[in-house]
Length: 323
Image 1 (cartoon, one colour):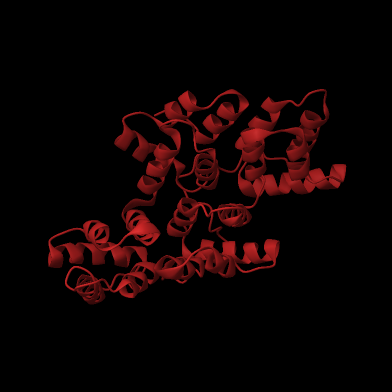
Image 2 (cartoon, helix red, strand yellow; image 1 turned 60 degrees about the horizontal axis):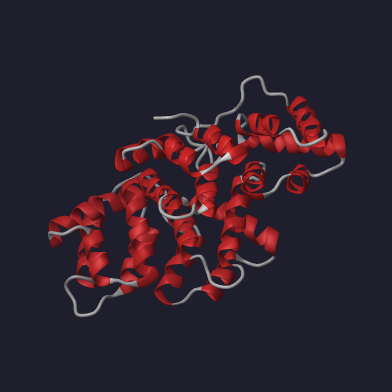
């Protein structure tokens, strides 16, 4: 069965002459030796697909009686450890944990919630919700409900349920009808009917929304983004804009997130690590192309100037090349 987490524009693919027990043994030696051999760990983990890393972890457990993730945690630290552990985590579990981290402790990291929920498809979200419940014995929806409110909460819950239509079929008269509904709910009236925006932007398929946004421009003479910016506010506005950006181009949206995580004072490693790992087998090549197009330098060079040491080496290997 095709995985919901593997596309054909990733930088990491299945390693051709893969041997799980040989890799597990090499990793065991790298961890057990005097001082950790980070180079071996980086080389193996960044050159195997997630499915292959799961097989390595299985072999590792069989041979050593230990959990690979736990050994990496106790042997490494900081961002290098976080990325290594992320790489050996199944994608749906990784997203579930990132969502939990976004809602844990004081204050909610709305940006991370928005990024994950706006950019994942229904099949992925269903798997993430299942993983979330399995790990935390609590539904993702319950946690989102207790951490957010209002229209923002409602839209997040719809996305978390994975209820977006994922067909590729486009119905022209529906696009016209939806565009008119959005226009009537926003630009045309005094006060905005937010529910209509949530219903259309969170349920309709991506190709359907593309056409709807074109029709919207015909009716209102302005883009859906401009209308959202003038009609909405706060996190709800941020979420709707993120959805529109993902409809137009998810790689461009994620390139923008990466750019934000790398520019200015201090690096936002939480975002950087998440996007590099979670898109490495889906569309990181396209994200790289968008990054170069919009920001005038390669993602590779931006990471290089903002990180250092083994952490830098690891991210650059995931990045897979300079543009």
